[in-house]
Image 1 (tube, rainbow, N blue to C red):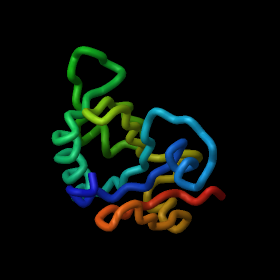
Image 2 (cartoon, helix red, strand yellow):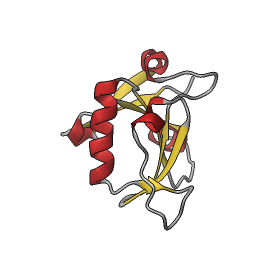
Image 3 (tube, rainbow, N blue to C red):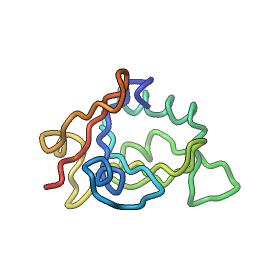
Image 4 (cartoon, one colour):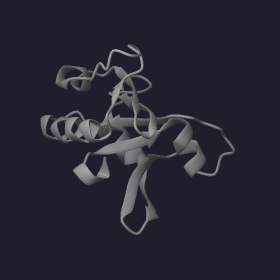
Length: 119
């Protein structure tokens, strides 16, 4: 998703692992920014990831723009494994609400992501 400049914040189990928690997790949970431009970039990234809905196994259902504009959850399978796109978490907190409580984390020289703080 970084190759497409998608704005997102890592939350959930992977976030906890990145903060050092001894948690086993099998999916990546992210809250994406729900602006028209970012959703367009996200749709392109999902094509590259060959993302399909986990709710409709074997049917190759791909989320559309209206799905990604909502505050709901899109549970996807990608060529790299499970990906949960969350429009909002908690009490309706979206990307812009969470960004002040997140920090940039550099995982490699060309890979910096935002992760939610543990608080």
